[in-house]
Length: 260
Image (tube, rainbow, N blue to C red; front, side):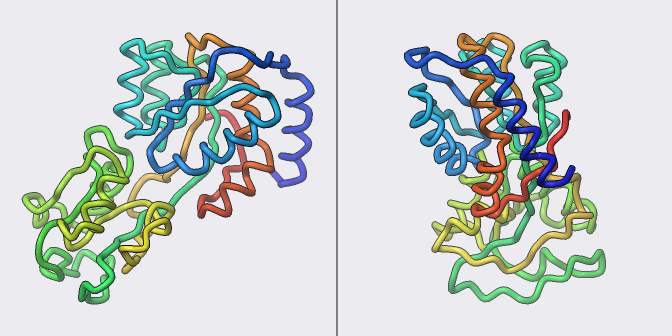
């Protein structure tokens, strides 16, 4: 979809939406940890315009999805992987037709500012495990999409077995970044947007996008939202060209939109 078409669609959607009433309960937005800054910034503008407060609950997408399935009071779910939004849809926890592709990201390898790291070649014949000492920090693949994408990339190049005992799984992608910042791990695999926020690490390589499934963030409205009008309004706000510009400033690639 062309940018002009997206702008027109956003305007039409805004006109068609029920108007939320100021004074409604604050919206609870369960969002992937890597989206904390952009959701918070978008929420501030939304609150300024509508008077509706937004509470952000950032964590790994898998942890958030399980919280929602267990009955946590959530109004919207922003996932770093369609896998978890699909999981909730199958359980009837997200409103059918509300899940949208919002943005994309990249994986990078990071190291400490002073760490000596050789040039990394993404090839099965490159001995990645032998190129550095210590451990490799990643998000826990069991519930952190960044960790799942990283695990897929390691497997693609045949590096997974040699590194099996040297991985340090973190509770979310920010935790994986922190381990490198603190010097607990020599290298880490995180999102490019998170690496860009840190002044304590440097990007030493960008993982080829063909090495893992596409990193697509999805946004959906929770079935049991207490404020459907307000939730729909913020859902729409996050899909505007204004927020797409914000995403771009933070290093994300805005999606062309469309139902997931």
